Length: 90
Image 1 (cartoon, rainbow, N blue to C red):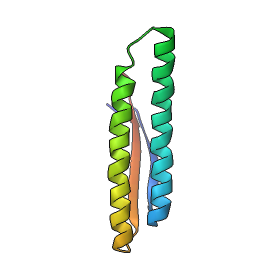
Image 2: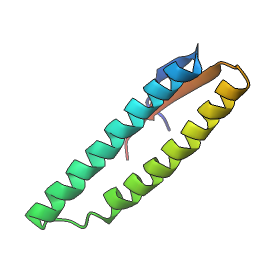
Image 3: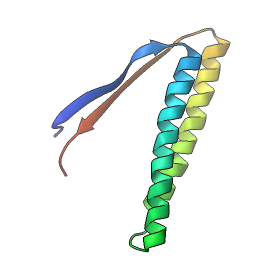
């Protein structure tokens, strides 16, 4: 059960705006996981496999999003982006 839901992104963007927004967001998540993996490796406290897998998945997602933005540009279309965050307790 979700305790809280927050709208992170809800708008219509030009392709260049969408590219910038999504690239910055995903790159920030990649950097988070890189730092997390590095920290765990240095401290030898935990396996960093999860972060490594997330980095790969995020890089693949970024490539897919970049392709979608190129298609929007080629067709002179704007991009609708909606992103919600759902918080719950484990």
